[in-house]
Length: 272
Length: 304
Image 1 (cartoon, chains in turn purple, cyan):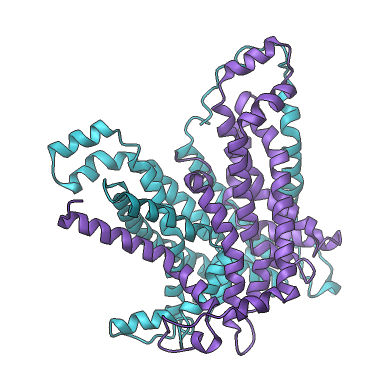
Image 2 (cartoon, one colour):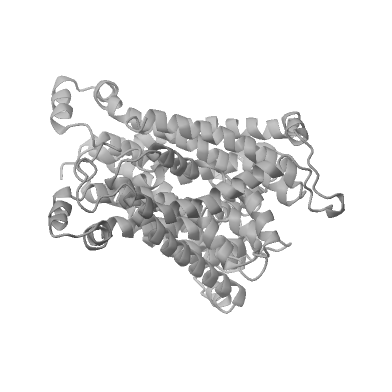
């Protein structure tokens, strides 16, 4: 390769980008392998003998295990529901024109933009009255407010790209709309559905505000528990960072799988 | 986006009935009504009541517009809105500038492997759990052993009591937000740059050797939709911002990082004044709805 000054600058720039995006992540992971003394060292230690103590500690801690379990149950259930409800809705939006369609879109977009605190207040009171505080169900349902729009958006986009000819052919064979949806749109739209499900899982897994407000002890999710370690005089930094790593690692892997769709997912498709 | 699809909806065929879309939509719409619209209406009702659950003996009487009057005359609420605006105008120009630089680096030809690697790592901050970003911030900006002070020392500065001082805490949440959301800007700009037709870009490169002229006259038009999306989406995101700030600073010290969602959460769930908090939340919702209207008007032209 030609080594011009332009090339070197380009390489340096890209390296800087990689260091910038990975550094905080790296710092968390490396702290999770440091002893408390190494973490508290000033100036910071860059080379150290790694220890697995913090991971041993959190995997023996029923609170952390329980919280990861809760997060898993809630994120999986809400994702399944979002796909179950959202995919048929996306089919209707992709294939039909009807009155109120633009209102529906407006509603989905506003859901993407609204602060969770707006719903957290009334849902807290309602859940208190219905004795649903600290249950999996209340979080599974409330997470649909942001998951359903995402699933509907991505699936509508995907369904629109399916050629209508296929459908015409099936119609001539006498298939009704439900059969067409099941036999043509679901299988051909599977990649879009998978991407939307992954997004829905990531957003649910990462959520803190609703989980903080609507859970007490039994159903605390992983981010809530990780945050709760942040109190007291001497903070267990290694344990906190190990928990953080365990929380972030699965969603990072998921995000890498859908990285090509990241922008679409985060903008509700306003930019392609 | 909703370009009229050719096909079934144009020609009512066998199997198409007026009510078919209804059955496909009903479950989703009904669910959103129960979990979204009903609680919102409930919040509106609550905002007209005195509703302090720390004092249940008072009951929850209707007080008309009292909550709204007290919110609109509450200087703390206005201060939190101004702080949110200040946060927005601080982070966004930096994110746009850095994002554009990164996008141009990734758009430039050559450096295949390094470029793919950088492109992939951009996803990492975006996927990091917001609460964990806050935890990392607590570690990095620690006064005694944080690596931020080590970086300052390299340049002969510091040490700073980041999270213990008003300016330091604000700077710390700004830096963490820049870390997390600059990749978002970069990816949006990169998408815009790749929309420029190859022939046009090459022809322009033959015409001029100035990268600035290329950017301004050829690439900029393709970057505008993304930029508009960013301006609106980021403003909604900043109004929503809670997790990272709550974990890092709880809005403090003093009210140095008391962004609007953090403030409303405290009024609702620390003071338990749900009536006032609901009035604040409804005002926030009004702002958000205006933003959403704008977003749709500008970016989904076909819908209206």
